[in-house]
Image (cartoon, rainbow, N blue to C red; front, side):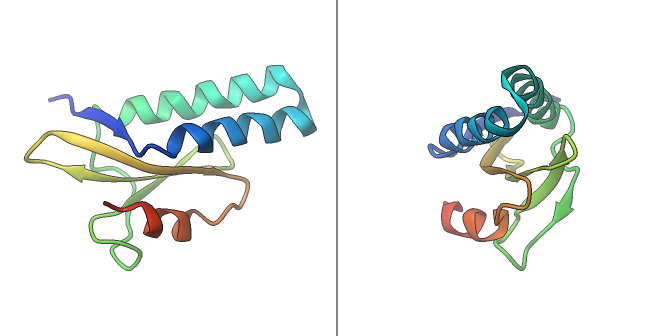
Length: 105
């Protein structure tokens, strides 16, 4: 069964910041390739929503998965609604734990 993927309102800002950061050190082509890889990992969660590490110590039900070699996607799964909520996407050592804790609804 496929789950619906939703985004916390600030995730768009996360992704834009990641792209801008990568553009500055590696160029536009690399940035857009990394963004596509992150988006592909997010899409895969719809088919495999229970993958990743459970991080209840950060927030109840929070899970985290790596994307590309430097990104982390933090999300929760609502099995009753068949939805995944992406709380944040970080890159290159950004503090995804604090960001996730502040965004869990």
